[in-house]
Image 1: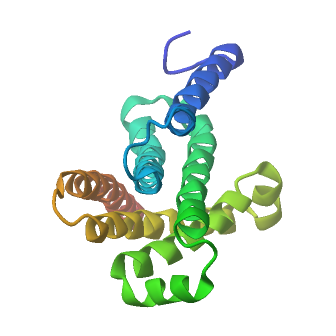
Image 2: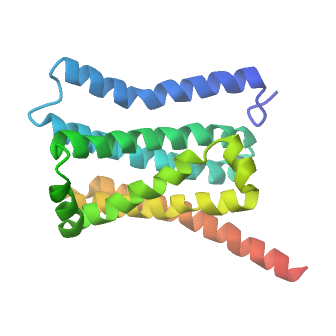
Length: 207
């Protein structure tokens, strides 16, 4: 059996490896917190790290479909849910760091931040849009919603990705290297989907 088709046992090992790899940033933060290794501003370190890995995992999740179509590795689709849930895990840590450690549940200050700081104005709704995606990332909800409605709902991830990149871009004040890289990757991934959609429309109209 080649890499295009994995048996259940091999796929289980692949998922276990992905799970452990996705946990590494969290483990590093925990160890850094225990050993006082998060630098002079640990809150900023946690906020930046969790935000970075949220975006990274969203990009990896969006890359699953193009990779599957280009390589024929259909088993990749079965890793997407876990990757998406890890993205939600890190964005929850990102938001809770801001809510608890940075703002200490000061709701008035939080509301003012949402209104006055553009990167938070964009980032907060992007976080909220991820909640229904995480809640419906199970077989029971797919069955309840129906495949078509579920797919339409999960297309919100495109808006989340755009919002996340804009949030990061507006947050960074000096070195824009990472935001530019994320923006370029997202442009390629969305462009790939547009090309396939356009080709599908052409094929459909020619029949």
